[in-house]
Length: 377
Image (cartoon, rainbow, N blue to C red):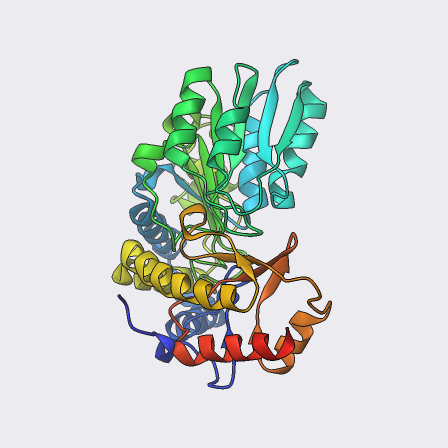
């Protein structure tokens, strides 16, 4: 169990922020690193060629360590939508086939597939998940010989319903389907092993559970797709781009691995130091330790929520870092506003009250939430 890490964040004592699934706050160390990065741009004559490469490669390696992947398969992206769109560009859907997603999935993981179905034929199927259940069975039952692509997350973003990605990968293998993952609501907080899950593409925006600055993220591309078509044709992704004086000697060759899929201006001197600082801290905590800590605290919190008449997704059906709870009849429509007046911050998504603490939270935060809900409900 990791003790509360509130001292690493600039969260006032009178604020109970239980909303990491909305946006993870930046640690003090991340803010300091970003400040140093911004100041680099103030003196551009101090920037050297390695500054365009080394920090990015360090960030790749750190993320790869968190998900047990090879760093050469990691590309830098600004958002989950960028990663899903990269997958759409490099996969095909034949007439009579379908892309399988979940109902109430995040829009960035729905719209690109709909456009793909218009481009290639086929259709997009959105499978409902019964309330209070894990999502695994719903996904597995829907995979057929007509399934070309399965596009899911590790948890459903509205209520935390868990998906066994190893079981889904095995089902995909049986029918020859590709597996595309959006891990924005789990990477950095829920352990995952890419060597076992073997995603074709897997993206994670960094600003939630990875505690990184906004507009930073990672895309993993499996070896069989690394010679694919990127969304951009940036200069830095090409072979020998380190030779600035020879950039007009154009080449059709790329840097090795998944680097061709990097976004433009990936070096981002202002934000990349913060990404590195955040991932180093997560690595130091250990994702498994972090997950076990959040799971134990959330399990206790769910019992207290149930006593107030809420219906949390059961422990064995959700990601342990994530609570989705149905509200009792008669709950006020302005519940979130009433909580925010008390400096308690949550979300509501898809009909579920979404409660997502992290290591900055402590017993005082949980007690304040329970007292407030008791008063309001």
